[in-house]
Length: 246
Image (cartoon, rainbow, N blue to C red; front, side):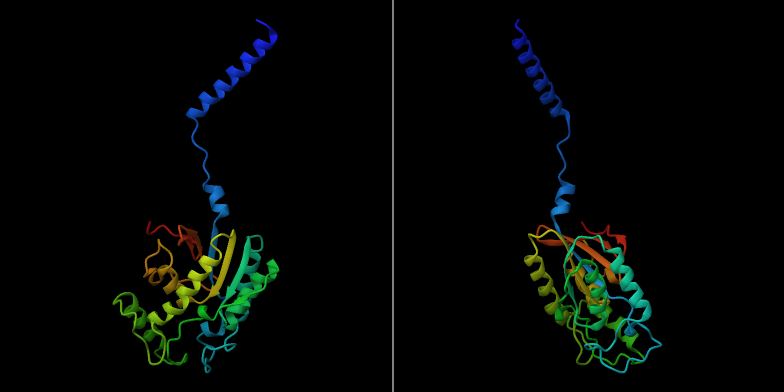
């Protein structure tokens, strides 16, 4: 047998060996690559603001620039911006309340991004003075009616019902899901505790609607979700992995 024939035979034997080995190897996983390609939506609660501190008077309605971040809230926002400095954030939306804008700014500055204001992401209006002595009890009772009694039309005075909040916040987020469906990276939405805690579970397929009752979102806390089959899937809530649902 000539040298050229022997060389051709060896090449054929090598190819056959590789192909036979491939039968026994597991198929390559594209999960990591898919995760990198998928768009994520991170919902962030603002840092501590004057509205969160009982010892600070709350004479004004929660509107516009009424309640900025406290010193601790500023530190929380700066720490948040630092922790997210290397995260691939592409777009930032913020409630029009000052405390949310300040928190979003701390993140935006690290990425050289501007902020898109989102009136639909403001806090739920409870319809009562912030300094009302029974405001905490009234809020807990209202949430119970919404989540336990399923009375989503319940409200206090001229305040919002859960149905009102749904009608403004859910279409806003769904529109963002459609707008960014083919993007990669992370879209940030800076909002408020009740708005996020009560409404994000209505968008995330694996979080019970009453999740907020046992998993309050802290100031500067993050709810991490990703888009899967046109729905949001929550991977982390306030720093802890989400294991409920499907």
